[in-house]
Image (cartoon, rainbow, N blue to C red):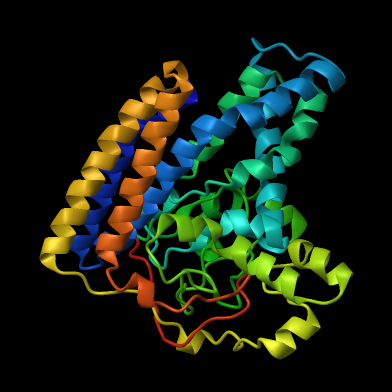
Amino acid sequence: MTSAQIIVLATPVFLGLIAFEFAVGLARGHNTYRLSDALSSIGLGVLSQVVGVFTRLFAVGLYTVAYEHVALQRLPADSLWVWLGALVGYDFFYYWLHRAGHRVGVLWAAHVVHHQSEDYNLSTALRQTGTGFLFGWIFYLPLAVLGVPPLVFGTVALIDLLYQFWVHTQQVGKLGWFDRWFCAPSNHRVHHAVNDRYVDKNYGGILLVWDRLFGTWVPEDDREPCVYGTRAPLHSWNPITANLQVYRDLALDSWRTKRWADKLRVWLKPPGWRPADVAAKWPKPAFDIRRVRRFDPAITEAAGYVAGTLFAVVLLLTMIFLWNAHRLPAGWALGLAAGIVALLWAVGAVTDPAEDRHEPTDDAGPETMPEGVHRPSRPTPL
């Protein structure tokens, strides 16, 4: 069974848990969902999986080449200790990829997709990038050198990803000792917050021990509710814009600066860094959390029904595509994928009919923010 088929089987579970969380939120008077945002987040997860059909071989292929040619040994795939060690090792290197994704501009350009939602719920977990394949594979090559078989690597990668689904919720409160050692809802809410106290903290995938070891752990403080999103907000439901906005902004700053060193530095510096000549000519306001405003364009009831219907078609086509992708002719695969992307764009257009009037943020990372204010209420404990 392919990883894409596993995702297909897991999809009804994901959607069922999202529906359950929504119902719990309504019952508690603490609903954390908005239709447009949820469709956008799940749609970006769909786009990520569709793109992954064509790019997964790239990352897995490079890992396999490294395993075949530079592995110091060949660890047995039938050993429990190899599997456990591979899972811990994968989580360790995931920590460094995740941390770099917040501190290196070009890596943030991929990872930013996951943080763009200004809501925080289980649909946010599905909000994944379509461009992470470009550089993410580099961080896992040490596992190939150590001799972790490709099958083991691919499986533990999927386990690590699936584990992280449940931590994207405001309906689960603090869990005591568990919060101190494992990635859990409380400390992952911190990770998604833009508050000065919380920003760029709690990178762990399964284990939070890496954050405690390397000084990036911060507990959630009930006196300071998390404000979600990015410091340079997307302000769009368009899935293409979501994936390419920061790349565009980096390229623009790189083109505009006169110093050749800065043209490269733009891509490697932390998000929000800008060359002095560019910042002087095209200044941007400093981030002020008191002025954060949630993107929430109004839609009619009819538009909501249209968006929901289109999205149901997207889910059906995506499940058919992912289940059969490994045996589809290339032309059919590309055509079906293009159709899914077009429908996702249509969902975004229906839920944000005024999208063409929005001004672009023109920013490379989380250092600036337009006006507004939004402070989500603190999570409801179990």
